[in-house]
Every structure is written in structure tokens, then in C-alpha cells.
Amino acid sequence: MPGCADAAARPELIPLCADHLALAAEVEGSVHGAADVLPAPCRLCGSRLGVRFLSGRVCAVCEWPYGEQPDGELPPPRVDVVYYLRFRDRVKIGTTANPRQRFGAIRHEELLAFERGDRRVEHRRHEQFAADRAGSSEWFAYSDAISSHVDALAAGVDPWDRWRRWVAEATATA
Image 1 (cartoon, rainbow, N blue to C red):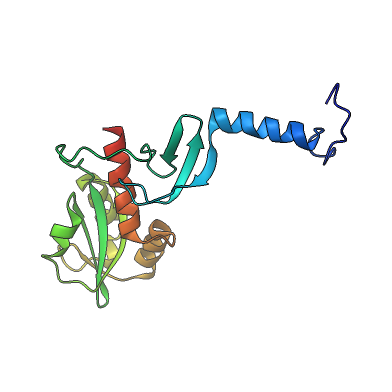
Image 2: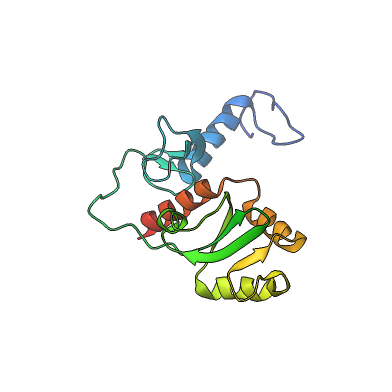
């Protein structure tokens, strides 16, 4: 750096001395935030991932301001999802805005995945997997095509974690 007598720590990467590099990182963090762990889980989505700004912290998942209490008087936002439930060698592809209540009425062994969407997305999935459909029901044979689709949707994330994130994001932007 011009006017600085100290040598750059890694001149091949950034030609700044350690002090100026730390100052640049601090300025960058004050503008764009710095990744941080929240002291306690986000009250909206439960994530511990945060972003620290000079003005405070926000959840890195749903951007809810850390420490703020969600308004309990507001109704929860509507988040429509297409769900994939497995029972033995069958998969039910359906849609709901209230999965816990809906799943209580459906015999199943496992929730495989959620996908954001309403009846239109559900209808597209029914058409996409029509060859595996059991009659005119919403149940399908658990084929390789459905398994691949479910694996891509799930991407190793617990479906309920994904659901909570979507609800938190919808609440934060309402």
C-alpha cells in the first residue's frame, strides 16, 4: 500500500500489509456484513447462522433481525407445497398449505420431500410421472424416476427444515 512501510503478508494475492488487510476486511464487513454464529437460534426459523453488521445481526437463512420477537397476533403466512409421502412401495404426490394437519389424515411411513408450489405444480408432477400412477389416485409406484426427482428436491436437507425456512422467509417478507 502506498505510504505503508510494512511488507504485504501475501503480495501475490493482495498487496496489503496485515494491518491494512484487517482494515479492509472490517470496512467490507460493515458494508456487506460478516458471517457469524448467532448467540441463540433465530426466533423465526431456528437457524444459528447469522450475518453481523455494525447495526446488529440478522439470520442468514431468513434475514429476521436477531433478537426481534415475531408478532404473535399476525396469522402465519400461506406457504403452499407439493409433498412426497412414502408408504411401502408407493409415493403420494399431493399439495397442502398445512402439512402437519394434512399428514395426520394420510397413512404414510416417511416424508420424502417438499417442493414449493400449488395445485398447478402438483398437476405437472402427476403428468410427469403418469406412467407410474396407480389408477386415477395421487399414489404412484416408487419408480427410479420419482426417486431421482425426490433426491434432487431433498438434496440431503430434512424436509421439515426446508418447510420452516420457507415459512420464516414468508413471514419475514410479509
